[in-house]
Amino acid sequence: MAKKKTLFECQSCGFQSPRWMGKCTSCNEWESMIELSTEQIRYLKETSRSSTHSTPKAKPITQIKEDDIIRFASGSKELDLVLGGGIVPGSLTLIGGSPGVGKSTLLLKIAGNLAKKEKKILYVSGEESSGQIKLRANRLDANHNSLYLLSEINLSSVLSEINNQNYELIVIDSIQTLYSEETPSAPGSVTQVRTITFDLMRIAKSLHIPIFIIGHITKDGSIAGPRVLEHMVDTVLYFEGDTNSDLRLLRGFKNRFGATNEVGIFEMNKEGLNDAKSMAGKFFNKEKLQSGSALTVIMEGSRPIIIEVQALVSESYGHAKRSSTGFDNNRLGMLLALLEKKLDLPLGTYDVFINISGGIKINDPSADLAVIAAILSSYKNRELSAKTLFLGEVSLTGEIREISSLAQRLKEIQTQGFTKAVIPNKPIEKTTVKCFIADEVSKVVEWM
Image (tube, rainbow, N blue to C red; front, side, top):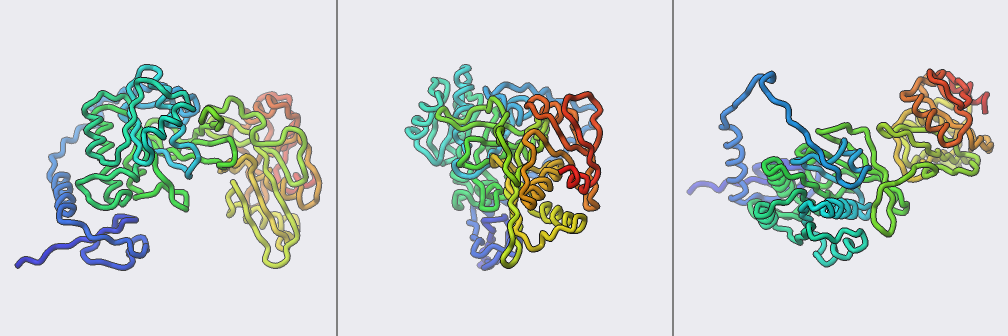
């Protein structure tokens, strides 16, 4: 009698083993190995065999014709900006974010906008009933005859509905709730998510239908499920922002049809998630700055945004704490070490906390100078001018280096009514903003 072949797969990372293990050797997760059924093993072998024996049909790249990418507007200028100009037919887009940040609200609003233009839209929900979605649609003004709702978690039923109707856009809410009968493991497992994403990708490319997928995130902020999910889709978007604030940021992390450095800004109100009309004053106090606050301008893609950096420096009663919200904690440690080395400040005996106002997360190194200014302001308990902004990247040697898009940043400063700016290099274009050139950190201290 032939010995039964067994195969175990990790639900967290997809690692496969011929024997069961209490701890996965790939991702170090405990109790994550499950035994695959005979049908699952046969399915994996057939998939591997078909891909191995496929006949290659390679062509010289000079004989390949370019794809004509024809986009269409989503009804949201901010979403179109992040996508690179609009929705691409046949694209597969993944949107992630923390619970309650507005993923379902945004996509239902977009579905309503397109249905209003007589486009046939399918909204598939595995978490809510059609009646619950109807309640949200009333608030979002998304009630249109061209918008179809389907409350279903069986992938075969969803694919049957897609093949029987000529939909022009599909929304899946969410990918972790769907399951495929061909892979009878638990919904949300690695095998299920991988199979479902592949089938949706095949449908999107073959029928030329754009599909939006909502994905839950884990505690560390990444999309739940295998990393292959992000590799298979065309675009990956993440929602950022404090759920207690009205502002939401939609940032692109992958885009095969455009740039990934753009960010969309939305406002949550009673009508749902709408485009933010103006960014003036959203991330800083217009009236007066308290001690420990400094202003700067960061670039989010092609958009300059004025933000407020807040710092709190207080005496430590034990081990000194360093914490930052919206700013890289490792970079904060580097700036504090620089201040101790170059300015002889005893910050080793002080707790230092940094916060970026408005719940925005920044990666622009040009905010280094504003962080230092805020720390010095809090340490000396001295208020900074509310009409002055600090721009510059600080190196390990204490040098303040040049930043990109300086002319565009100064134009935004001038538009918002600010009169002074501390910058690392002389502006090329003429500006009414009075600029103070600072090439070292010590110069900033002298200016303060």
